[in-house]
Image (tube, rainbow, N blue to C red; front, top):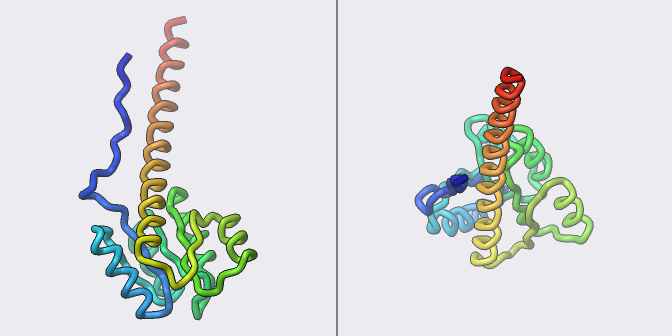
Length: 161
């Protein structure tokens, strides 16, 4: 029996990113680097602004500063996961420590980067995060399809007996 492979996003369809950082210069540089690679990027300078953006649309990847003037990036990541459990968070922070890295990873961050961070490192992390997002969504969709097919098969077997 032939099984169709899950469709993956083509290079034209990049995962939308929400970039949250209170430093304008950092945010603008990171956005320019990501947009140059074809990623659609929305920016937010605060938790409030980021929450507004999350309410307006979904994001596959969040590039988050840990410390914001009105909250913590990890709180925003939890909110994003409640809206889309497949969303992937990458932390980019100047306040690095082993404790904050462990906390970020335990609370669902996919990667943890220290500022300043070379553009190629950020791009690599975002690329891996976007791939993870696409794969987990594809896996969830295929799982739903298999569960539906299994229920249908069980109904047919029951009605045949």
